[in-house]
Amino acid sequence: MTATLHTAPVVVTNAPTAGSDAAGVIRDGAVLIDNGVIADVGPAADLAVKHPAAKRRDHAGVLTPGLVNAHSHLQYAAYADLASSGLPFSPWIAQMVERRMVTTDEQWAESARIGAFLALRSGTTAVADIVTDIPALAPIARSGLRGISYVEALGADDDQWNADRAGEVNTALDVAMAQTRTAGISPHSLYTLSRHAFTESMRRGRELGLRAHTHLAESADEVEFVAVGTGLLADMANNIGWKMDAISCGGFAHTPTTELDGLEGLGADVHVAHGVHCDSADRALLRDRGTAVAICVRSNKILGAGRPPIADYLAEGSPIGIGTDSLASSPSLDLLEEARAARDLALAQGYDLPDLNARIWQAITLGGAFCLGLDALGDLAVFDVPTQGDPFAALIDHGAGECVATVLGGTFVHRRGGQ
Ligand SMILES: [Zn+2]
Image 1 (spheres, rainbow, N blue to C red):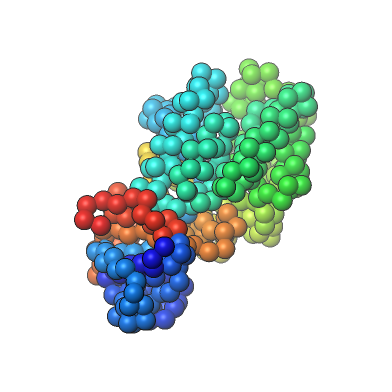
Image 2 (image 1 turned 30 degrees about the horizontal axis):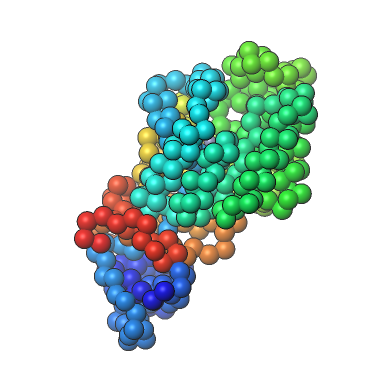
């Protein structure tokens, strides 16, 4: 493959490098991609001299590393009507459970393919993707998207886990690991798995050396369910017929984060989604364990789950990423649209330091990579946003819907207009 020199009026690199300012921004910069990896970064004029044989691609706008979506379920792209249904969290979950039963293998595969396409089209090149149904694995692997396919363990009490769910999860893990995309394990939540099913799925993932990802402290209903074993999620479990420990013992009298820690569900090999109902002790525990949180502001709002304490997470230095969640509870898979909502919420919560845009940008790049345990960000995206002033503010204010090119491993996977 020939080397390609991608130039742009502004190149954002995320770390100070030759010719950049302290924030890693290069004016009239360039990135050399050789054999699918980033081989050189610096001022365009210097790189053109150093690499005269490289094919040249001159972009307008701001060129950045590919974005990392820290929490999604791409297979739910076809469930977008649920996001606009106006249902609050617990009835929404119940609706999801019902709807899932009538979705065919072909529909899962097609929906996952669309989800991967929408992610790439908006400049996202890596996703923490939760996969509940095996047919959703192959289209995402084929799309080239990087990241992890977290095989989900969902909806099992002890009896169901021992009878067939453990076997099903093992089969899905085998399929996921046989594909090129990295596999992980996702025990869904503290209210859809018994303690035994939760710990067993975590244990199986770790035995295989896989990372884990789970939903945590998303709604007030979850807090009530874990603490006292009652509420809408207890009603849902009873209706479905799950025998849940929290219900039979009248709750555990602690927070979801404490409960997850007790189940050995935290650690540097885990990241959690949501973290809406985490108080300062919970957030300190997450930090102590090295567990990052994927914040999903728009999904939380749509489901009435609450507002994640993003200003606190930022002020306390907690590792965070940002996720769009699925189209079943979110208006788009566009990470810059999500980033803008997260930034606006942090402002509303009183975060007033001038680094806010840069930190939110970090959350959708390096923060997401930390969530997923990815070492390097080797892919590129180009956004048609103003090139004057602070590029982080320009990307977050104007980047949604404005991705004009996405380059994955040296190959264009999305191009708009004259790019
Ligand atoms: Zn989710």
